[in-house]
Length: 362
Image (cartoon, rainbow, N blue to C red):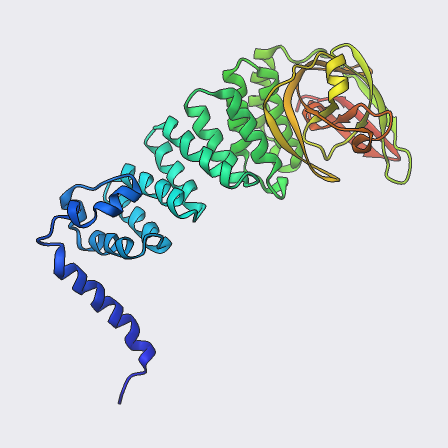
């Protein structure tokens, strides 16, 4: 009984590959046979590694099909297993530069360089990842890791902020990115901002995130930064008005009074550039993408030395400066009071009011 042709095709392919191996891997010089492949991938392999039958077949496939994504993926994985991680990472990086895809290869390449503690090279690859996928949360996260390893903590903070903002459901985001952001802030000596990072993560899911471990981390940062302005049990209460329960409040930022909307769905305190100038909030080149109710918006990540809302104060608050007009926040509104401020307190909505009070020890 004859077997169907579809069952013979894989056997033919295997036989073809095996023939390629028999024809060269034992006696031909791989440096000569695969010179073009090595040049495209920006790397080379020791002769004994290239003569491994599996490696030889994959190199031969890339010689015939320069942009064979399956072959480069399998080759990189095989080289990693054999302990040749740097050639694997270089091959993935240069393959994407030559062929334009797959973007996932850049994430793998960055990850390998991070494992090798080659942070400068990891930054180079991650820069390419972000350039090709600017709205990819993972691209910003791995570049943040690379920048942190390279000691560029300020840029790392910005990438971690972008990774958080570009993530879909923030309630499902790993604590890892918030912890790394806090570490980067702490390395800059900005301990109150470090505490805000962990507090923001806790606020996403207080039932599961508010633990003794997170409270200790927050307490340590607040003590190091002298962040708590009062030990009294202070609170403020505001009426929610209108069909959308918008709460407008007067608050001071760096001693300058403005009108703000309390927004528990916003990650950051956001202000218009005109108000930032009046409040002497430093202008930076640290651009991040904000997820807002009206879509995404661009702004520069900075900080306010102090924000005061009635009797409540917070020191060292991350702030995003937006180049906006009145359509973004509304006429007469200077910005939003988001979670980089509100997470320092306990926020409760009930009976048509929003109450903000000092966090109570647990």
